[in-house]
Image 1 (spheres, one colour):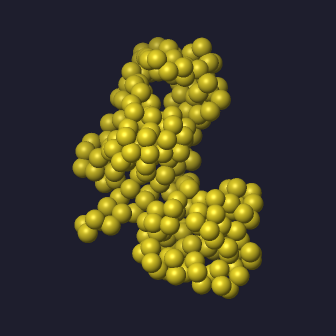
Image 2 (spheres, helix red, strand yellow):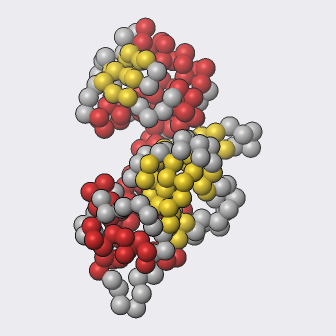
Length: 226
């Protein structure tokens, strides 16, 4: 492995509390490898077994679900130091119902889940620390998916959008913020048509509820998450 990964404990939650000098030996014991993806290249494909998970070192991954008509629903966007397919691989899902692909040139650290989940007869303390961090990661993913379910539980595009923007405002601790989606990706995330979403954004801007320019938003009036 040619890339220096000793800074991972400072950047990636899965390596929290792992001594820098133990990072690369741990990665070697787990049989992890670095993979570079071109824009649009698929890392995990719908219909295949989930037996690996990934940490994004650079670039962005999109986790998407496609319906029978080919319409995409973005489940999650994974930014640098985020993880993809952890729960699916640990659960041993036989046929993936999502596709994970690179939104741009992306470098990932790829793990075989079978190696990760077998610390050996005499468990290594560093390996156990990694497993603990992995458990926390799973819990955080569950919370995130719960938030998306809360967003999609709203019947109208307006409430879905405002609930999402309210959450982004809290996350950024500011009424002014950028979202990680372009307009089409935001529509896919909210499970609505792009044209309908754009019309709703225009209405909210005219009413003085929000201001919007590309992926820059500002909440101009108090918005309740519910």
